[in-house]
Length: 256
Image 1: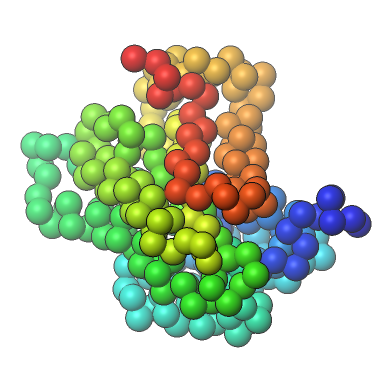
Image 2: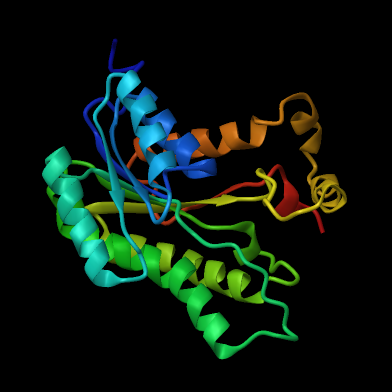
């Protein structure tokens, strides 16, 4: 294999939420590009182990690690284990997040705190705690998963929308604060994977609002593939690209 076919050969990567959905797709793609992967999960050890087995089948190293990312002490322990197994850390991909409706009729301060902690504070804290490891790398980077709801608020998801908007601001602030040693960017997905609790008719309405939704009719995985390609791009492109919020939404945010 050449460096061109394996652009991430030898890179040491932590993927949070790497056991399912977009996190799983990203972990497997980065491994296929040559990276060794630490697969994080919160309460899904069997799924994470299955992903690790697929990574090892590609000839790469893989380790499965459990942690509650809203607890700073657990994050510190997670990073110590990652560094111990991989011998350092070059890239953090923060996919782990929650996605829960918070209707304003029942929204409490506790709900706001919980969702903001999980979706805004935890990813930023992860990168801050990983800072010494990423600074020691010759090409330290972080790719954080935002959400289109942080650009255009999603009705019924006030707390989630607030949290993702705050996260986007945090990505840009981190990029400025940690330059030039660490590159920080975000992928901002639109509706590329159907939420588990969404009905067929609701999902159809969401897709009808996406200008490029026709692609999904021919290839249901086209949206996931686009997200994966965006992460790989941000993991390999010029370090001059930092603080970017890379929207991958099929043109949804371009339509009023």
